[in-house]
Length: 633
Image (cartoon, rainbow, N blue to C red; front, top):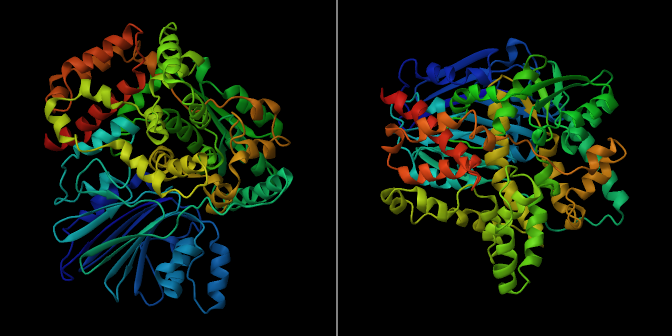
């Protein structure tokens, strides 16, 4: 895994300022501490920091060129079918100087041009400079595992793996996008293609970017389709087909010239990855788990069952509240506001894992592919709930639920029930967003200053999801909802969380569930093989049942959350007030003091659970202090 960056100029004689590409690469060193390289000439500069995984020799150094030097590439990721592609290219007369997957892309581009992307099976972000055409061709993998951000600046285009690299460019404007903050408070992340900066964009998953003669175009090269459906007849046939594709995806991701292991949460997805790895490996698999002292969030006991069953070399770390000391590091690492609190344990499990291996397989992507989130069952229940007469829903059931005693356990039954009735909307697409959102529009009204409210009045965060629903080709609401999550929550939250947490620790994370062959198979399966009744991941659990302890496949999904609600009543109580109510924070002009004070008061007296909302606000303010205030000092 690596970090990439570069700049191309409209004027072919113009050169990058002295030392710029070096400074941009410095900001990406955590992504690739093993080696670094740069290429600079009039009109273009490219930089690369390398985490050596395949072909550890200097032959793998980047930027890399083809035989005649007409093409240069900087590449971040892994192409899992590179050996097969290389063999075919050699037969066609191509000569290789390394054993890297990077060089395969160069020769494949010589053969097919932009169409080379259809042959790549892996996770990647790369930029390829075509000297003859003075053309930059960049692309990002189908699922969005590897990031790429770009911006037009002063007669040039700059790009990088992370925003912090772009901040080294003197002409890059650090103008904060208020609309991005508005969306962040809804979703806990900033949806693509937006970034926190008005002038920068994320390249969406499954897209390529072409720059030529100062003109930028982006194009989608892959979409996930839910029709037509695969008709295999029996459950056994589907189960066997799933295991065939899944095991191949796992084995491809076990190819490495450095030590390799796996994250093991104790959930069915990561457990199935470990089971497959163990059955394919001649030596014990190295597994790594994170635990919590808070019982409601701890899954270590389940991870141990899988580790014992397969005789893995198992390591654990318990995250105590003092882990919040890492919060400033997370703010620096994530480049823009990012409020998924599970970034904390993901960071720590990556830290633990990197002490022993350089590559780790994970179970990310299984929920979006096979319907594993509890919200899918909740959404199905809503369709029945809305059939009830309005007076029964509003006058009886809603009031009954609201009168239930306050709870300190937002994940418990009462907490989930309260959240459900508070988010009901007769339009199912809008209901889905209301159930997911951190801040509702009503809560924003109480929090925003008049100026910020006016500036964001025309922005409707729900419309982003409604647009994804309209473009989804599923035959039923579940498939269309899975398409929505695969196009938004998966790349903008899950993939960002894992990429940044792992790369901050110079660890490469690979997910078999994000293999596009497996994603396409899952999309083609009938919906009742994903959600049957109230049970999610029906097919996946049936396939896993013979391979895992019953406690793993039968238990309710827990998730990788954090007890932030309790932290804001204890360890973070003083910090939250000091930071969020400071003159510095309030003078930014986004939020009113009364709104913040009300949230803190309601959270402390248990009348409302604002834990995740306070986390989002705290991360946002700390981001401003790190990336805006420090630059202006």
